Image: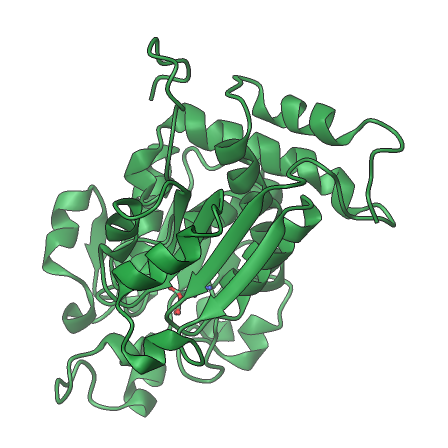
Length: 331
Ligand code: NCD
């Protein structure tokens, strides 16, 4: 992606998919996120960078981590935030996505963060608003900011992504996180193996530059075990992907005997203890699950910052410059 388009147009309007980013963009965002770490260590964790800007968080699907971290990220950057959940909003009264966007766009938001059960909904939103649009998860399609925070977490724990072996294990078929992560991890030079029963590995995966394994023993070969939940809300009614959750856990669950101490265990959350991951593993020293949540805050700050400030090739340093001046913190 050209950082300085000759037309002078903003270099990027939206973050809908990992394919909107190239490696330089990802590096810049991760560096910017790193720059925000120091702010998170202060007593006053707020900087004036996006004062006067407005971020709308529009969630048509349940969320704990993604919605709270986007909201806090915007607040830590001093933006005004409006958080709308579909239930309790006029969506309940039959308002369409288009009309919801037209309504919220009347407040001239700078960014609309949207989560929606339908793949492609964030792209539709871009047609009805002047705001930058960030995809916070659309159906089984994409969840780009989850991938950024995962890359950030891996890099922090291991020091690099290049050359790592990563297994994504479980319900890949219904996972937008897996689709984003396959792209993001391979872009940064990791090798991805999808591990799970044939019913939960999508057919198109073979064309995505990954290895496919139907043996849980292959977890032994990797540096990072990335566990996915059974996403029952996206499963076709009546379809039997696994004989029972109990059998699924026995065959595919990430249990202590399947994890070596040198391996990292990650999970986007929410976890179902005792189903795809045992409580022992989730709470073990190998687990980076809480680190992932923390990384979500600084990476989402980086995404908002990157969309709303001038292009730079040294994002991290620029982010620091933007937040460092003494006395500029706002309570
Ligand atoms: C994921 C999601 O919503 O796609 N969760 C998240 O954003 N942390 C994964 C999931 O729901 O299993």
